[in-house]
Length: 101
Image (spheres, rainbow, N blue to C red):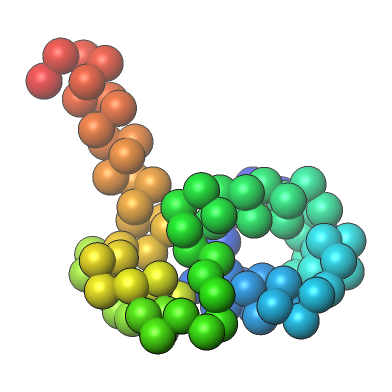
């Protein structure tokens, strides 16, 4: 089982699909080679970033990230960065704020 490596867009898609099919976190973790805690954390993060969307949402579709060009499940036209790039933008802003730029 791998620890502390970034989630790929493919893993995010699989996680979303399995959640829609009502898989339990422990089963998702086993399938993806992650810990249950990693799956729970990712679900929490994706929900907070609105990455887990209703399958009925007409806005939900796979889009290309404007920064890294990876495909990811987007919750709408205003969501154009994958979670990895979105987080790196947040981290960059936090660093700039912390050092007073």
